[in-house]
Length: 187
Ligand code: PNS
Image (cartoon, rainbow, N blue to C red; front, side):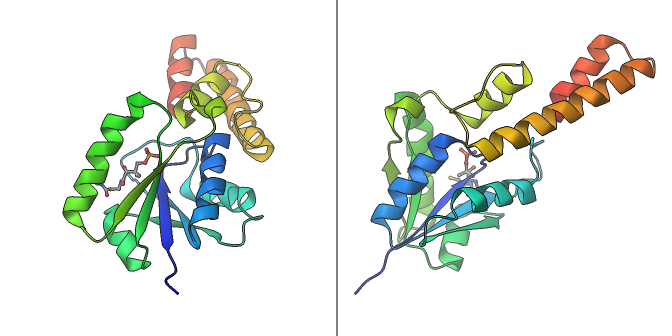
């Protein structure tokens, strides 16, 4: 019997409940699902790839057919390397569609044998993104129910470290706007 393996590529900085919702849905229709974190040296992420991997491993430990990996280069090359037949992506709203369609068609051009499969997360996560989680947490808002508890703790730890650093540099003679700029970059 043919077994279908899919990869779920993304940045996951940080992973959210929306990602987890999609992983759960994907694990039900694919025999095997690999959550693949892009190692992107150009971005200035909140979490290292190693941290994101640990968080995703903890979040997915309850799924027998889900594993976590990292990759660089083209997603289609990675998919072929791990012998996956499909790429799973989430679509939250129409606004995601154009970018996702473009990416899916480019991936098809690069590797026609691979299919992109779109799934919709629960509508309660339709406004949720890693970028907004970072921004809300940084500005002191609650990210409760938007990310798993362990991710929430890790985000808070990051912010506390940045705040401590900020008081440190202020004492070292930096202006408050210089400190803010530093904190924003760190987050
Ligand atoms: O979570 P994100 O940031 O929306 O994920 C985007 C991701 C990682 C899936 C996309 O940027 C990607 O596939 N990058 C790898 C490089 C690549 O294959 N580029 C061509 C895509 S058409």
